[in-house]
Amino acid sequence: MSTKTAEGVAGVEFDPGAPYRCSPQVSLRPEPFGALVYHFGTRKLSFLKTLPLVEVVKGLESRPDVHSAIVAAGVEEAQRPAYLKALAGLAASGTIEPR
Amino acid sequence: MKLVDHFQYGLNSPICLTWELTYACNLSCAHCLSSSGRRDPRELTTAEAKAVIDELQRMQVFYINIGGGEPTVRPDFWELLDYSIAHNVGVKFSTNGLKIDKRRAAQLAATDYVDIQISLDGATPEVNDYVRGPGSYDMAIRALENLAEAGFQQPKISVVMTRQNVDQLDEFKAIADKYGAQLRITRLRPSGRGADVWDELHPLPSQQKQMYDWLVDRGDQVLTGDSFFHLSAFGEALPGLNLCGAGRVVCLIDPVGDVYACPFAIHENFLAGNVRSPGGFQEVWENSELFTELRQPQTGGACSGCQHYDSCQGGCMAAKFFTGLPLDGPDPECVRGFGEEALAARGDGHVIPKSEVDHSRTKLGKKSPVLLQLSMGRPDRACETSPLAGLGASESDSGLRPAGRGVPVAGS
Image (cartoon, rainbow over all chains, first blue to last red; front, side, top):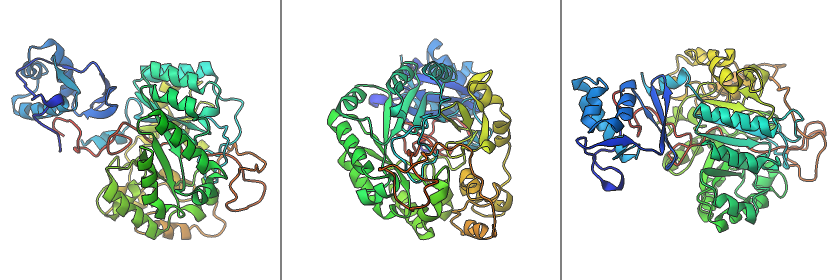
């Protein structure tokens, strides 16, 4: 997996302690495995490969930080580092952004 | 389960939908996949086409590939283009360049969310016009010039690879660079009139390796519509989805509203339904018998024992079908040579399935390619290779990549 980490769009570091949201330019299409992500700005297609990850991304808006969105989606503790890594990748691609 | 495995079982909506707006075409390319030429009187009306766009918006199909025929000869083409974009359904359309004059080029350059694909099947007029007809090279180049002058960002040049143009790959790239375009190459299929010329035009085995090597070197700069996955058996997998997406992530809506499993499969055996029937496109996509069947696990048939089956998946369904080969065996261009063996084993008197859907013009026009100089019965009109896929600016133009490569995910 070549997911970019740490660096977000415009070089802003991904900070899971900060509030985020799904980009308003992004649409999520529910699929059996999770969701298809389409970014109307970059016209790029990507995928959220698990259903809980979809919940996390949708829940960001209403949570004070990324960590609590992960907890609220019921992600098991052992899985959380993998989710943080995936979310860093989503921040780098502009799918999610600080709010 | 890997992402690609999910794709085999079908998605809620297509990722790559091709919509051919009309069978009418000003050209008559010898290898036209949809046997286009004459308009069909039953083609969808403007209102019906808009209703389809509304439905695609509801299904969250974020962009479509529009082709034909030559889609721009429809008088309502520009109206439908604007309507689609306004409804969050982006458009990439394929054209031979006919209508891309300075005025349209400027209009397109000012439109967000539209992508243009100019068909060119030779890097020189000799090679191109041989299959696409006299004057077609100049028409395509003029369109590219107009787009470049208007500042249209990165149109695509779409090339169907043939025996005659494989040696021109570097020249195609140079043309693309010259006009600020992106090169897209796709595989010749024996579909439509392509069946008549496949024996003469399809690349030789040595050329297949040549294309593969070129793609391995340049894969990141060139789009392919993921159409060369049968070449993956040469070695490393090519970028993109190495899987036949027909009826799973891909489909075709033809000008009269018929829904087929893929753009290269216009034949009743691959007809899933019609957008005019109750429930519309969504009903066909979700519940048609054909698509349900295509989403069942595939066994691989005669190929299942082959060590390369995982990478090539038995190749292209349409290529097999229209060369008279069984669908659960090797692709006719299997890089291990099993396809040639299978073709030889068809025996005398084998029957190649022929589509009932043929809008070829019945008379030879001045602009018809002279290619084979066959009888007067078959020839004329049509064109346009229509995009099998096309998304964004990622390494694969369907935007699909093998699971785990560059896709933001959690777990696997």
